Every structure is written in structure tokens, then in C-alpha cells.
Amino acid sequence: MDTRVALHDASQTLERPPRGTLAAVSARPSDDEDAVKIHPSANRRLKDFEAALGLTIPPPKGPLFAGVDLGTAYIVTSVVDADGAPVAGALTRSRSSIRDGLVFDYIGAINLLRAQVETIRRAGYAIDDAMVCYPPGTAGRNARAFANVLEAAGLHVTGLMDEPSAAAEVLEITDGAVVDIGGGTTGISVLKGGEVIYTADEATGGTHLDLVLAGNFKISVEEAERIKTDPARQAEVFPLVRPVFQKMASIVRQHLRDHPVETLYLVGGTSAFPGAVGVMEEETGLVVALPSHPLLVTPLGIGIRCARDARANVKPAKGK
Ligand SMILES: Nc1ncnc2c1ncn2[C@@H]1O[C@H](COP(=O)(O)OP(=O)(O)OP(=O)(O)O)[C@@H](O)[C@H]1O
Ligand SMILES: [Mg+2]
Image (tube, rainbow, N blue to C red; front, side):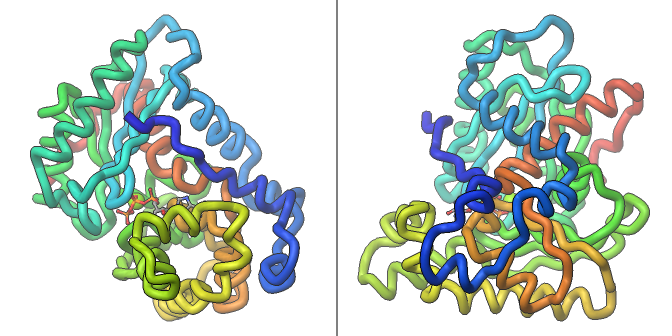
């Protein structure tokens, strides 16, 4: 199983912007400035989670908690200890089992998640209690279907939560806009006082960047995705995908018109593309904060919430 894909550390990009056009186009804040916008402990935990995906951290004594993100591009499971510190995890391509936040191939999703659960357990991490997140605006049946996938994969579901709240859990924020640029969609959520007060989902995500590159170079979308995620090629292809980022950013701007915020937090794997921050800043005029490993934010947040609810001895709602 491909649990060890090369994850892009977005903060590395900030430290070493590629030469040429990209650095010029996306005048981005220095790493120090960005650290002010992203809570340092959030970036630390994300880095720890990336390391934990290697399943080499000795399993701690005491209970463990899991968080599952069933995404269009990746199924990601986080495993944290009772304090919410990451200790293990798994990351697998979704292989079309989930599409745009809906369970598309139920059995396929169960099989992929079950393989993750077995791998994690075989490595010595005794997971059972777990939470799962659903795209905002899809509570109800879809969220229940997500919970059923977890139960069928051998986990005990203690609760469900929406994706932006999971991201907020890691970022330690209560206010601002969380913009989640994933594989299939871009989710825009506005938080005020810790509550999600507005949410929207637009059908433009990383897949659309792949399609643009595939069309341009006359290659498969798989090859296009490889180029897109190769740090050595990203500056070269930025002019080609820039209009897609501009479209995403203009959609975000429209949604935020009636819901003004000061800070926009970029999460989701596509946010790791160097240039995403710059375009978003130009289009919205807002302060844009990018955590390290944006792809891991939401999955880690679910695990952390699972542990926190257990600590608080709260019995979370089991879906509607
Ligand atoms: N370094 C990178 N640069 C650009 N894109 C990247 C990078 N790393 C991952 N991606 C892209 O991020 C996307 C996956 O992100 P993520 O895991 O957040 O999506 P998802 O949750 O599976 O999808 P969705 O939220 O739309 O259901 C893929 O399109 C992938 O190609
Ligand atoms: Mg996602």
C-alpha cells in the first residue's frame, strides 16, 4: 500500500521558492511571517503526523484515537494518543471510491480503509474508536454512509464532524475562512466564534489542474498529476494552471463578499502548489495563511477531535 507517498511540505516551498517566474509572480510572505499566521504548534503537529505515517513511532501505552478523511483523491487515517499527538497514520489513493465528497463505490471504499486499519493494527497500534468527517453541507445520509464505511472496515465510530471544523481543530482557529482545495472540489467555509456559519462547495480542484496539463502536453492525467506535484516542474507549469487557480480564487472572493473575514486559511493537497497562496492573495486581498502539509490538516483534525471528545467524556452526535 502506498502509505509513503512523497508529501509536499508547503513550508519548505516558502523557504526555498523555485527560481524564475514563480517566485516573482507569487510574492509570498517569508516563512517567519507565515509562522505568525499559522500557529507554530499546528505546523509542528502536522510535521509529526507526516513522520508518523512511516509507522515507526513506538506505540504508546494508553488509548489511541483515529480520524478518517474519505477524500476524492486520498483516504487518510490519522492515529493520535489521548493528548492528540500524532503517533501513526495511513494514506492511500481513493481509486474513485469517493467522488466530490460522496461515497461512489461503497465496497471499494471499505476495502481501502480496511487495508489501512489492518496495516496500522499489524504495526502495533490498537485502534478502535474513530471519527470521520464529511464535506460541509452534506450532513445526513452522506455523513451516515461515511460512518458505515468506517464500521464496515472494523472501526467503532464515536462521532462525525464537518471538514472545516476538523481543519480548525488543527489550526487552533475560531474565526476566518477555511478554503479547502482538494482533489475534486474547493470548499469555502466561514468560521465565527468556532462555529461554521457559511459553507459552499465548488467543483474545481486538483483534478482540473491535471486535466489542463494533460490537454496541454497530450499526456494521461496520471502523468499530468506527477508533473504537477514534482517540485522541479511546478514553476514551469504554473503559467498553464494559473487560470484555474484564478478561477478558484475568484469563486472564493464572491462567496466571501457577504461573509467578510480577515484571514483565509488554505488547506487541502492542491494548496501545496507553489503559487496558490499568491493567486489567492491577489484575488481576495486577504491575508492568506498556508500550513505545512495542507493535505494532512483535515485528517489530523478528525483524530485530534476524537481524542478531545473522549477526554471531555462527551458523547458526540452520531449523525442525523
Ligand atoms: N505538492 C502538490 N502540489 C499540487 N497539488 C498537490 C500536491 N500534493 C498533492 N496535490 C494534489 O492534491 C489533491 C489531493 O488533495 P486532498 O487529499 O486534500 O483531496 P481530497 O480530500 O482527496 O479531495 P476532496 O476534498 O476534493 O474530496 C490531488 O489532486 C493531488 O494531485
Ligand atoms: Mg478533502
